[in-house]
Image 1 (cartoon, rainbow, N blue to C red):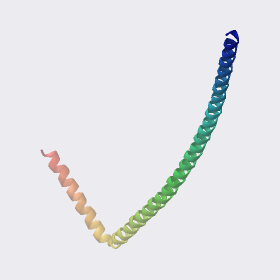
Image 2 (spheres, rainbow, N blue to C red):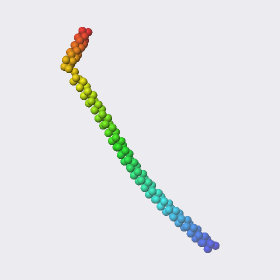
Image 3 (cartoon, rainbow, N blue to C red):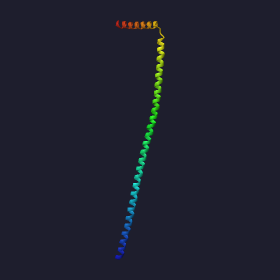
Length: 125
Protein backbone atom coordinates (compact mmCIF):
# COMPACT_ATOMS: atom_id res chain seq x y z
CA UNK A 1 0.00 0.00 0.00
CA UNK A 2 2.89 2.31 0.71
CA UNK A 3 4.12 1.64 -2.80
CA UNK A 4 0.74 2.65 -4.22
CA UNK A 5 0.78 5.82 -2.17
CA UNK A 6 4.26 6.57 -3.34
CA UNK A 7 3.27 6.07 -6.98
CA UNK A 8 0.08 8.09 -6.46
CA UNK A 9 2.08 10.91 -4.89
CA UNK A 10 4.59 10.82 -7.72
CA UNK A 11 1.74 10.81 -10.22
CA UNK A 12 0.17 13.83 -8.53
CA UNK A 13 3.53 15.63 -8.45
CA UNK A 14 4.07 14.82 -12.10
CA UNK A 15 0.57 16.00 -12.92
CA UNK A 16 1.11 19.19 -10.86
CA UNK A 17 4.43 19.80 -12.64
CA UNK A 18 2.72 19.34 -16.01
CA UNK A 19 -0.04 21.75 -15.04
CA UNK A 20 2.53 24.22 -13.69
CA UNK A 21 4.55 23.87 -16.88
CA UNK A 22 1.46 24.54 -19.02
CA UNK A 23 0.54 27.48 -16.80
CA UNK A 24 4.04 28.97 -17.20
CA UNK A 25 3.92 28.33 -20.93
CA UNK A 26 0.50 30.05 -21.13
CA UNK A 27 1.77 32.97 -19.06
CA UNK A 28 4.80 33.35 -21.33
CA UNK A 29 2.57 33.20 -24.40
CA UNK A 30 0.28 35.84 -22.92
CA UNK A 31 3.27 38.06 -22.08
CA UNK A 32 4.51 37.77 -25.69
CA UNK A 33 1.01 38.55 -26.99
CA UNK A 34 0.74 41.55 -24.65
CA UNK A 35 4.15 42.83 -25.75
CA UNK A 36 3.17 42.37 -29.39
CA UNK A 37 -0.11 44.23 -28.79
CA UNK A 38 1.77 47.08 -27.08
CA UNK A 39 4.20 47.34 -30.00
CA UNK A 40 1.33 47.29 -32.49
CA UNK A 41 -0.52 49.96 -30.51
CA UNK A 42 2.61 52.13 -30.40
CA UNK A 43 3.02 51.73 -34.16
CA UNK A 44 -0.64 52.66 -34.72
CA UNK A 45 -0.31 55.75 -32.50
CA UNK A 46 2.84 56.80 -34.35
CA UNK A 47 1.14 56.28 -37.73
CA UNK A 48 -1.89 58.27 -36.55
CA UNK A 49 0.35 61.11 -35.34
CA UNK A 50 2.17 61.19 -38.68
CA UNK A 51 -1.11 61.19 -40.59
CA UNK A 52 -2.51 63.94 -38.36
CA UNK A 53 0.60 66.06 -38.93
CA UNK A 54 0.35 65.53 -42.70
CA UNK A 55 -3.34 66.45 -42.67
CA UNK A 56 -2.59 69.58 -40.62
CA UNK A 57 0.13 70.60 -43.09
CA UNK A 58 -2.20 69.98 -46.04
CA UNK A 59 -4.90 72.05 -44.33
CA UNK A 60 -2.44 74.89 -43.67
CA UNK A 61 -1.32 74.81 -47.33
CA UNK A 62 -4.96 74.91 -48.45
CA UNK A 63 -5.69 77.87 -46.17
CA UNK A 64 -2.58 79.65 -47.41
CA UNK A 65 -3.67 79.10 -51.03
CA UNK A 66 -7.15 80.42 -50.26
CA UNK A 67 -5.65 83.40 -48.44
CA UNK A 68 -3.46 84.08 -51.48
CA UNK A 69 -6.53 84.03 -53.72
CA UNK A 70 -8.41 86.26 -51.31
CA UNK A 71 -5.50 88.70 -51.18
CA UNK A 72 -5.45 88.83 -54.97
CA UNK A 73 -9.21 89.47 -55.17
CA UNK A 74 -9.06 92.18 -52.51
CA UNK A 75 -6.09 93.84 -54.24
CA UNK A 76 -7.91 93.69 -57.57
CA UNK A 77 -11.09 95.20 -56.09
CA UNK A 78 -9.03 97.89 -54.33
CA UNK A 79 -7.26 98.75 -57.59
CA UNK A 80 -10.59 98.96 -59.43
CA UNK A 81 -12.02 101.22 -56.71
CA UNK A 82 -8.95 103.48 -56.80
CA UNK A 83 -9.13 103.65 -60.58
CA UNK A 84 -12.83 104.51 -60.43
CA UNK A 85 -12.23 107.25 -57.84
CA UNK A 86 -9.39 108.70 -59.90
CA UNK A 87 -11.54 108.66 -63.02
CA UNK A 88 -14.39 110.43 -61.22
CA UNK A 89 -11.95 112.98 -59.75
CA UNK A 90 -10.48 113.64 -63.20
CA UNK A 91 -13.95 114.10 -64.71
CA UNK A 92 -15.01 116.44 -61.90
CA UNK A 93 -11.75 118.41 -62.23
CA UNK A 94 -12.32 118.76 -65.96
CA UNK A 95 -15.92 119.85 -65.34
CA UNK A 96 -14.82 122.45 -62.77
CA UNK A 97 -11.98 123.60 -65.00
CA UNK A 98 -14.61 124.24 -67.67
CA UNK A 99 -16.15 127.10 -65.67
CA UNK A 100 -15.00 130.53 -66.80
CA UNK A 101 -13.74 133.08 -64.31
CA UNK A 102 -16.91 135.16 -64.53
CA UNK A 103 -19.08 132.19 -63.52
CA UNK A 104 -16.78 131.42 -60.61
CA UNK A 105 -16.81 135.09 -59.50
CA UNK A 106 -20.62 135.21 -59.71
CA UNK A 107 -20.92 131.96 -57.71
CA UNK A 108 -18.52 133.30 -55.06
CA UNK A 109 -20.51 136.54 -54.72
CA UNK A 110 -23.73 134.54 -54.43
CA UNK A 111 -22.27 132.32 -51.68
CA UNK A 112 -20.95 135.37 -49.80
CA UNK A 113 -24.33 137.04 -50.05
CA UNK A 114 -26.00 133.93 -48.68
CA UNK A 115 -23.51 133.71 -45.82
CA UNK A 116 -23.87 137.39 -44.95
CA UNK A 117 -27.64 137.16 -45.11
CA UNK A 118 -27.59 134.17 -42.80
CA UNK A 119 -25.33 135.98 -40.35
CA UNK A 120 -27.58 139.07 -40.45
CA UNK A 121 -30.64 136.92 -39.84
CA UNK A 122 -28.92 135.18 -36.92
CA UNK A 123 -27.86 138.45 -35.42
CA UNK A 124 -31.36 139.97 -35.63
CA UNK A 125 -33.02 137.16 -33.71
